[in-house]
Image 1 (cartoon, rainbow, N blue to C red):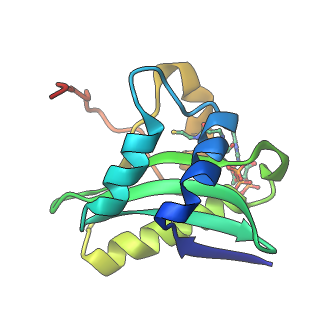
Image 2 (image 1 turned 90 degrees about the vertical axis):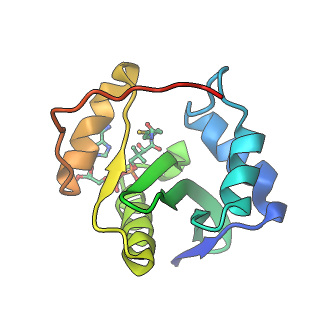
Length: 136
Ligand SMILES: CC(C)(COP(=O)(O)OP(=O)(O)OC[C@H]1O[C@@H](n2cnc3c(N)ncnc32)[C@H](O)[C@@H]1OP(=O)(O)O)[C@@H](O)C(=O)NCCC(=O)NCCS
């Protein structure tokens, strides 16, 4: 039995373990800071997917006042390819719609471009846009 809920501080280590197992932790990002900041910010949250009480997935979702964004979407490897990613994205979309976001966006690293097919199956399109960044 699957269910989705908002993460709390107590979920920190389990969520980061999932992100690590999924290859989502990169040297330039501290997942602990990212988790805490997402929970501390009023327009973002971390959603976790549980299967019979066991945490099997997590995603950061936030609304910036114009678009909704997903980050760190990961499903434990043993639970992939059975619809769990779809379930968690649907829950994140429902949360964004509730916040008033008109559109969901996400970024995929070029090294992980195989995952684009997953998002396309969920109705996402690759857009003709370059993403620029500046670290503070
Ligand atoms: C990407 C990820 C979240 C997908 O979760 P999942 O639970 O395996 O996906 P689902 O089972 O819900 O798949 C939904 C659909 O996408 C397809 N799909 C899933 N992963 C895919 C992939 N890598 N390539 C192509 N299609 C894929 C499934 O076959 C399924 O298709 P169907 O509806 O026709 O049956 C999961 O593979 C993961 O955690 N990967 C590692 C972390 C990662 O790359 N995250 C994304 C960062 S941008």
